[in-house]
Amino acid sequence: MKRLGINIDHVATLRNARGESHPDIIEIAKIVKKSGADSITVHLREDRRHIKDHDLKMLCKKNFFINLEIASNLKMMKIAIKNKPKFVCLVPEKRNEITTEGGINLKKNYRLIKKIIKKLNQNKIRTSLFIDPTINNLMLSKKIGTNCVELHTGKISRLIKNKKKYKKEFLKIQKCAIFGTKNNIEIHAGHGLDYKTAKILSKISHITEYNIGHFVIGESIKIGISKVIQKFKKTIK
Ligand code: PXP
Image 1 (cartoon, rainbow, N blue to C red):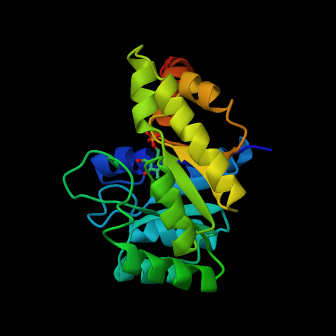
Image 2 (image 1 turned 135 degrees about the vertical axis):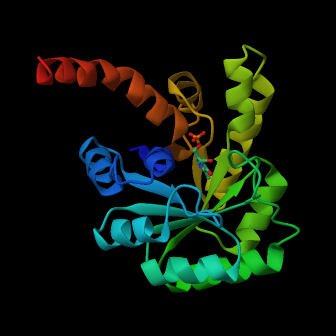
Image 3 (image 1 turned 135 degrees about the horizontal axis):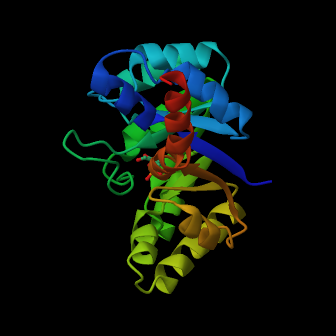
């Protein structure tokens, strides 16, 4: 069975825009779970621009299957261990980026990443690394000892959306997925996915988990707005 993780960071972005409590993160997490999602992803950014420490604490306390994304530093690692999410995915993080641009640089941060992964594994947290799809990155991931990798699908998603040729990128992802699986690394995919890109990538059977955020929230507004308006019309009648 393929698993689906839903990233709810943008629910927090919307909530924070008003500085109040609506939409409520826990309420949304319950709906996400009830709707069949296998896990809930949150990225606790160092600037706390969307998910806050309190959100993470409450989500973990309420026993949701939380996939926590964090930058690879010891401070964030300690926060993860304290909250005990089921899964942790190390991601690159730049203060000024709009979203996670590209995968983590495993070569540059090798020793630190290895140390963090070891510590998280010791704490029985499933570990993952958000990487660009290259065989070299998978070989490094194997040496680091991660349980899973999440292949960055930003490039293929952009190519598909812009109606450009994507075959080469697809084959690259497929090759990495096969190589990873053979080396006992579970393969996940994420970034920029929508119905069409997810459908195309689902042809790669070695990908066992998809993590999707922005499109899910945007599409939910599109699908849900009519219902809300109708309810208001009734309310003010
Ligand atoms: N996976 C990872 C590791 C991410 O950092 C993100 C968000 O940047 C996603 C998946 C979800 O990407 P999107 O919001 O484009 O669906």
